[in-house]
Image 1 (tube, rainbow, N blue to C red):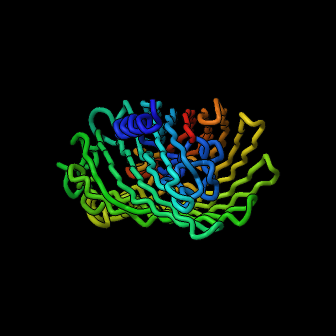
Image 2 (image 1 turned 180 degrees about the horizontal axis):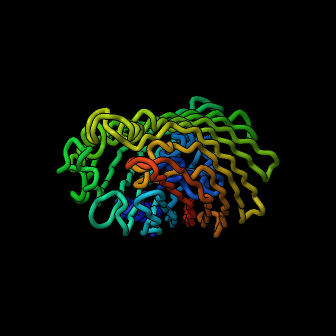
Image 3 (image 1 turned 60 degrees about the vertical axis):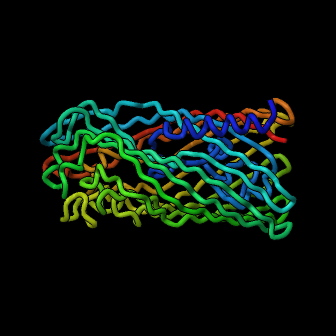
Length: 406
């Protein structure tokens, strides 16, 4: 089979699998990394050309990345739970603890100055599914929000040191909420609050990138994504602020990579995710206006800073090993504890391991593992004292990727 036919089939498979992209929560609801090589390094990728996935990380790296294609699948395994004391006692775990997250990347050097390609990936999302309804609703309780992004990419070398890049971001979201009848009294439109099936939303954004390869040892990179305005979730305009709005927050990142030795590369990224700029995500539950209004109640998430540190060791011509550490802020506030039973994105620390084995000079296999230890937030229930609620989350993921190079 020619590489072009393989590309076409892999691209079709990735697009078909895209809507299956699982809801997750790591750095807030953004993934800890994009591409298995980056995931093995704690997500560090902004100044690392070899990690690929330029459309998700830094479009400018496409100019240096050469010809490659990668197809991967991440098995994401979160554990989420909540407890309540002092009144309507509860101790419940969320079901649905295994999600399949596909990803795809293609890059081609069309000249010695320009690289083009496409990246398909899941940005993240929120998901819970409780068998017991703790919010005075009926039936199961939960929410499921997923995001798929297709990012055509172009990177251009200004000279042998500097490159710039751009990725239009074609975004598709799905969501459903169920069991929220108990919030009918604080909703602007209780008929568009819960149990309306799956709704969809779309939008177009852009990611800009810059890369400087100062030498064979030192590189610096930067990427920036303005807030992406998404169409409304009309079936849930009585749940999310601004009549069903759920925009993707502005985010930016800076990164540096250093070859400490010919075989060892160290990479460090800083990322800022401005959840505070999206009202449906950042409005606190203590706001007076009802759910669905512009200043209506919401998750109360704050913006966060994330640091990603990764190490890559070329142990042999065929084997490359990786390890990483990712630590970020916790966007969830104790004042909003009850609403965040639906979205307990409270983990702050991630430890990662990974490796790539070259099957030939044109193909390789990559594995990446992530462990995020349990973290919790406790606060007074929305239903009032003396009820106190605690939400908790821990995570693991195990990903596999097959890559072609030519």
